[in-house]
Image (tube, rainbow, N blue to C red; front, top):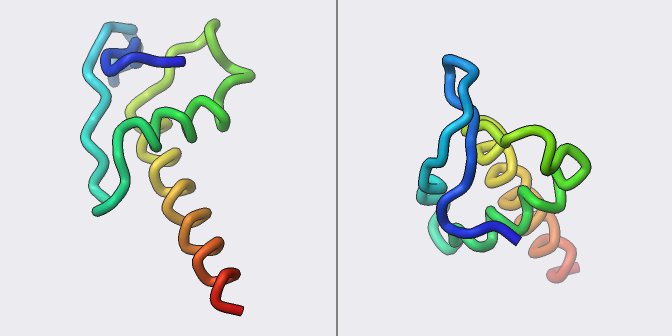
Length: 75
């Protein structure tokens, strides 16, 4: 899939290799976010680099999915 360094678009619309940001949610790893981002954006890849906003949205969506699954388990 992806490695720790990825091509990501920057604000000035250029694409450069940067390290994937550390997740801000406790218990969520870079690998988890990377896999989730891949599933969300695989149709765009490899033609378009992901943005930092894409990674942030992937983490938020992953956390929402995890919370929904936890709520469903308790029922």
